[in-house]
Picture 1: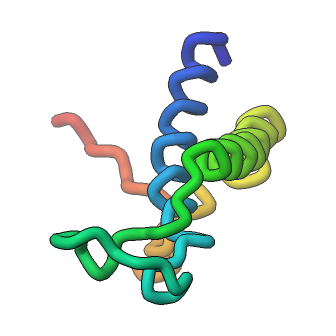
Picture 2: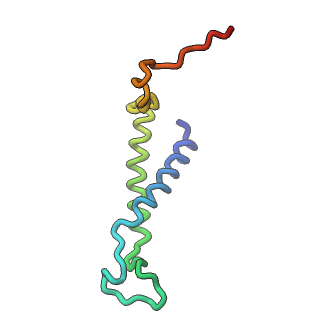
Picture 3: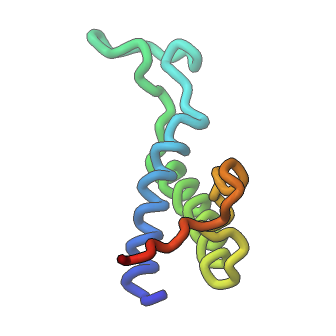
Length: 100
């Protein structure tokens, strides 16, 4: 795998992980007992820490990318492992055409 490809894949993992990690640990102003600003949404977080979210995202994305790279390197799970329809027809591949 080339370095640019690895960086691009890591960035994709990081962006997807950001949305998965974002809601964890956040509490609303009501849950924290903090006064709300007039006009503020009831669901707005009162303890959002950008640096904690970025650190969590980076660590989780690093672990996920590491597992992805190890799978790429050693081939633990391949595309052929997801052929769920292999046993339904009794054939493992499509027969070649006769080409008359």
